[in-house]
Length: 305
Image 1 (cartoon, helix red, strand yellow):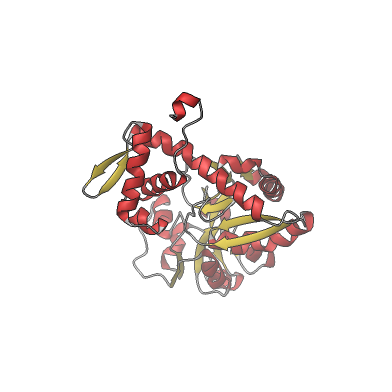
Image 2: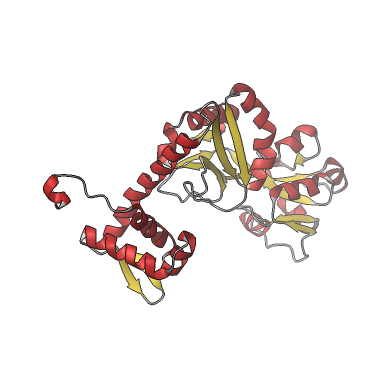
């Protein structure tokens, strides 16, 4: 008997939905097959079965890959949430109910310099929540990588997710007190002949900073360059040069007196560089709500929705 005759909902096979989501994600059937552990013909078969059930094409096929049709885009937005909810439900069923695990992913420097020193305070306030923290600059897939909240560094462009931005973050010129005493700086032009440390991964780098002050980038090479902010800050604290870095990431160094801000009222620049990103459904998780409330308490007016 046809399901339409019985009034039962038409539910496509999970394999077909997984094939659809992975193909949509990569725009490539062969790559989707690799992730799913299938051969490309099996993925193509599942896609054809799904399109047959729906009665409308979900993809536009081309020589270099596939792209979603408008129907496919709408379908992806709706089924991705269902798959994620299914993964969450399965995780809850298999986990130890006596200990809730909060899975965080963070950009490396924020995780090391800001979050790590405060985890003890969070654990003291919420001893029933276990924390799993991973760090990288990669934007992870929430359901596949089992991430509750991703603390990302960059320009906020994640329209399908909830985004809460750390406000009042500034990029400021930083130096060790000894270096500053030896090489005083009162204006941007004074830095043209100084030893500069380049942070390669930041939103604001020395060339753009000099341009904001109407100056060309220095002709001499940088003293040092690093792909992590914490390395630039550590090098600056040892007097190896002037760094252009986040005031939030530098708090530990500033509080200890290892670094000082150089003419902050003149040489600093506002930036929105760090963001808490998560699927909207995650805001219903008690562990996520408690973490967000704690973050708001720690950051105060620097945390906004």
